[in-house]
Length: 73
Image: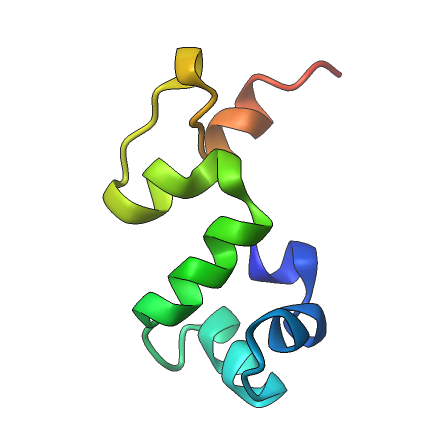
């Protein structure tokens, strides 16, 4: 997800250093609750999944994997 938006844009949205988002995207550091909040704002359809790992497609709450598996074409 971070690569989809890009660390640069996320650093602007969060007012966090670009290198922090690069490290998060590489798995070098753990994502913080503040960064989860930024991701939820960028991807509201993934809010439940980001917080709990659960999805409820009928309520519009999915995951990137679910969306990829159910995309047309």
